[in-house]
Length: 566
RNA sequence: UGGGGGAUCGUCCAAUGGCAGGACUACGGACUCUGACUCCGUCAAUCCAGGUUCAAAUCCUGGUCCCUCAGCCA
Image 1: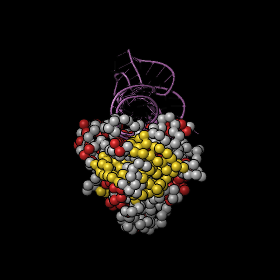
Image 2: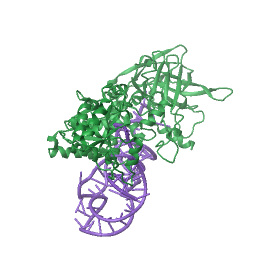
Image 3: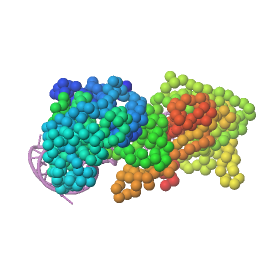
C-alpha cells in the first residue's frame, strides 16, 4: 500500500465525497471503481485515474473495484486484461476480491433493456447507420424521429429477442432509448443502447451476438456494484444526463453520482491510444514497453518506481480545467524518490584514458567507497585503483572556459574516494587533434580523497580502473517529441513530424566499476554525477550488461555550458 | 450560429465574501569528496469591462478566449 497516503489532500472531488459522508449520503459509505476497457495498455494518464479512485477509497475507508468495461468484443482482448491487472498491482493498488467485468452483467443488462422496452422507453430501430446519422440532425438543428420510433411494445420485444437469438445481421437493427430527438444534447437524441456484433468475446465467447453500448452499461454496472462516486474524464460530462436518465427510468438499487475531472496531459509526449499505437506499429519505438513511452510498462522499464508515479499523480492535482503538466515535474518526482533509495556507483559513459605516470606499473589497490553519502546505513564497498584509468570525456578540457573547474592541463582535481591527480600532459591523435590520452601524476598523501595539508581542489570526478572495469551498453533516453504538445495544433504539423530524432542514444563503450558485473535486472543505481540507471529487464545479460538511464541528475554546469554555446 | 464545461505566477494545484498561498521550473546565494542532495533567497498570477459590498479570484450583468459533443467506440 502506498505509504504517502496520510496527507490531508483535498480537491473538488474529495470535497464532494467528504460532504456526502458528512450528510450521510449512501449511509456514509464510499465506493469507487476504475473501469478500463481492455483494448490497450495503461499509461500515466490512467495512473492518475487509478490513484484518484483507489486513493479516495482508502482515504475515506471505502472500496475501489476494478471493472473491465468489455462491451465491444471486436476491440478487446484477454491479453490486455492481463497487462492491465499487472500494471495496477505494480502501481501498488489492490482490488482484493472486487474484480468485475461488465460482461458479468450481460444477462442483467439484457433484462434492464427489456424493462425499458416494456416501459415504452426503448425501441428497436431498423434504420441503417447512415440513416441514423441523417436523422440525428446536427449541433444546431434538431433531429427527426425514426420511422420505427412508435413500434409497439410487443413488436419491440419480439425483435429484441430475435436480435439476441442471432436472427439478424450486424447493422440490421439496433435498440435505442426513446428520449428526445430534438434535445440540444446529442447524447439524448435516442442513443443506441444495444447493437448486433457477431464476434467472439474474450469472456463470454459466442454466448452473445448483441452487446450493450457504453452509455447503457456503464451507469447500470456502477449501480449493480453499489458505486457511490463514478469518477470519469471531462468528455463524459455531456453523457451525464443520459447516465442519470437511464438510472431514473429503471428500477435500480442505487444511483451513483458521476463526477468528471480533466485528464492528464504531459508535455513532450502523447497519451492517446491512437497515437501510442501508431508509434508502436510504425516501429518508431520498440513495443509498448519502450522506455520512451508514457505507458506504465515503458516507464517501469525505464526505471520509474511506482512510488514516484504515485507522488507525481498527487503533485499534479485534480481539477476540471484542461492542463499540460510540465515533464520537469515527473523528473523531479523520480529524482526525489531515487535520491534516497539508490546506492551510488562509479561508471564512465564516454571514456577518456588517464595514465598516472608516478603510479607504479602493475600495482593495484582497493579503495573504500560510500554506497550513499547521505545514508551511512547503506555501507561501503571496495573499488580497485590502478595506473590506467578512465574518466569522462566531458571532465577534461585542454582549453577550458572560465567556469570550467574539472581537469585541465596543470590543474589538480580529486578522483572520488581515491587521490588528487594533476594533469601534466596530453597525447593527441595526429590526424584529428583529438585528445586521446591524458597523463597525470597523483599525490600518494591524498589517499581516500583528502590532503593532509588541507589544500582544496575545485572538482571531484568519477573514474574507473581501466583493467578492472566491466563494459556495458548504456541507453540514454530523451523526450520522444521536440514540441510540447505533439499534434496539438489542428492546423499545425502531424504529431509524427515532431519526433525527436535523438530520443535514444546507445552508448556501447561504457565502463562500469567491477561490482556492477552481477547486478540483477531492474536493479537501480545512481551513477555519480551522471544520473539514475537501471538494468534493462529484457536485454541485459550477465556478460553483456544493458543499462537504461532513467533520468539524469540536475546539471547546473550543463546549463552554463549550453548558454555559452548560444 | 445549439448544448455542456473551463479561464489564478512560465507550469500544475489552493484560497468556498476577509492578508492571493504551495509545489515544479527559472534565477541568485550558502554548503559540498557528486557542478547532485540539502538549506536560504529572488522573480512571478486572479481573462476583460461594468456593478453589489466596509471588503470580490469568489456574488451579479455584459463580453472575450479555450476545451468538448453530430460512433451501431469507450
